[in-house]
Length: 240
Image 1: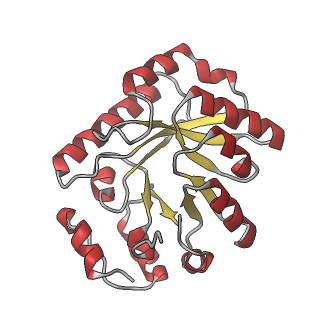
Image 2: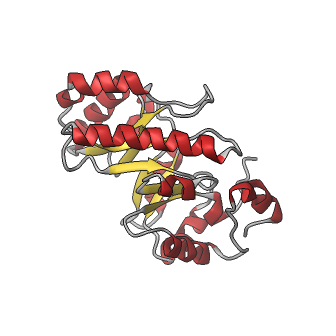
């Protein structure tokens, strides 16, 4: 259930949802999102019972940020769930998710891309990935610097990895009440995405993952076709 505290937290951009069940929240969100925008239900820290409730409402794509937690949930939930790794990923943790992960959103270095490729080879798979770009003002956020990534892509360095497939970009905007700042960050990421598409990254380079609970509507307005939403579906997290 969503509390008054939650609605106050996200009310600055007009993002409110009535107190409903998880399944109802999924249905309402999917009805709101434009055609072609995929919903990733961010299930990190929530129990498998909550994920199953969303699953029974038709949701199949779930995002996690901790590899061991994702692996455990994968083992106890339906096999047709499509698992996305959305959090910062350490190279020594790739092995936990390589056998089943559908998409890694948070590739922020060549070193990580190389390890995903190595583990994909071991599993006999090709793993789809997004390159995370640092667009926020907070230094704590991860991701490639835009100019650094332009040089990396121009050099064709990723072509050396035969078992990863570059599918697009991901970014996290600054946590702020300034909607125009957030809009500007999303717009710059969309422009970078369009640049790579125009430079021949291929037809499978088709995913722009930006927008979370507090800013997903702005992200969609700016061209996002994949949003990552957790607490708007499952309620406030308990990190205790």
